Image (cartoon, rainbow, N blue to C red; front, top):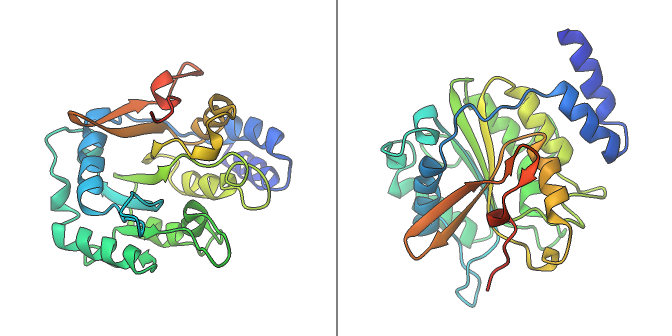
Length: 246
């Protein structure tokens, strides 16, 4: 059975995206394994306060980050993210991003990668972390993570429909490569804001495609701090994952 699945996954990389999604359902076993939205909220409140880079106008800037943490940090609301990602490390990542640099396992714990978009090549930050396949920053991170850890991938903005979800620069194969490496691990993809150019697109359809590969969540700052939602339940997309900014 394992050899059959490997064959299906290899062929999936060579077929159109519509068929790819079907094969993903057949060949990838990606379960949520009890990821707790409350625990995710603690992680991303910490990211918002300590990592989030700013634009020249001091607005929140697009970036992507992936971190490997103890499973408890994704399941237990009392787990302290600073035990595996200190204030010192968080500041270092933010400083690197603010200078336009990538973080490639740049902390003492070697459990974080992060990037801003590449303005020279127009490469999106998610793509920067997931490619090239087999030698990407994500591959390097996964080499440090065992199956008992929780790997969280975060993009400030939702993956854009035009470039991130379709075309030569889409991130699907990168996500597939990640999950195929950690079929039995705890994994989750999280975003905060809806990309402004996608607010009139059919995001529900695109989010279903992502969730077919890896559990998708939205974590958003509120007046009470940070709240997270599971985006897909029984093939229905949670409206909290679709609401536009006011």
